[in-house]
Structures are given as C-alpha cells and as structure tokens.
View: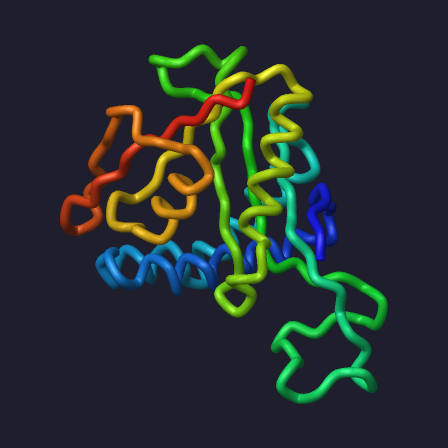
Length: 196
C-alpha cells in the first residue's frame, strides 16, 4: 500500500475509481438522474479525457494528481475472496484511490498561499484501509513543499462520511457555501485547514 504521483497508464483506473466512488457515495443524497449523468458512459469519456490532461499536462506545476495503490497479489497466491474485478499483472500495483489539488480559485482566497483539495476518493471496495488518510497526508506534504499554508475543499453538506473524515483530520467549515441545482437544491460547504 502507498501513494504515488499518477502516471499516464493510471488514467483508466483513476476514471473507473472516480465513477465507482461517486455511484457509491452520492447515491444517498443526490437525485438519480444527475448521478446517472455524472457517471454514465458519455460522462466517463469526458472524465477520462480530463484526467488524461490533469495527469500529463497539468495547468501549473502546483497542480497534482496522486493515487493510492495496493500491490496486486499474483493469482497463485490469492484466494477467490481476495480477487478484485480489476486484476493487474503480477508484481504490479492497483489504483484504489485518488486525490488532486491545485491553487484555490475562489475569489475570496489568495491562490499563492491557499490550495484547494479538488478530489479525494477511494474505491468503495477498498475503504477502511487507510487510503484516504495516506492520500490526505501526501497531499499536504506536496502542498507544504509548494509553499501553501492553507487548504480549502468543497464537500456536499449531506456527505456526512467525508465531513466527519476531514473534521477528524483538523478541517472545519469556514462559513462559505453554495447550492447546486441538480433537479433539487444540493448544498455544498467549504472546509479549511491550516498546514503552515
């Protein structure tokens, strides 16, 4: 298990992980229609292209995509219960989570000192193994190296698991919120933490 910088060959796995995580996490509070639009075949092609660009040609050197990986156990050493539906070749690693970040773009923050955690997702079949914490810690390490002292992120107000996870790591709501029209209003809140 570990975290590393995403590579071009990770694009398919990153896209698949995002789609699977969204379907699992957002199903409890997002209307079905918008969720299907965000995770359907047409959207998947769009996300694949966007992740390809984010990984191979990020907008700035301060934008990064990180992946959490687990080592693939060769078939002869694994039992059927340990097999994943996305097997990899022996002695390789499997992407099981992702995080992306860059300078914050909200008009009320300073992008030279404030970063935004844009994505933090773990495949639903690989939760409760520390991948989210490892991704978050690696993200903070990179952001400190890049000179950031504050990090913000936007979270759906009804995503109680993510809110609890970030709050346990020292994040807190900073009072900013926004409402998305997804067939019905879906509220997001902004969280902030100091890393300086």
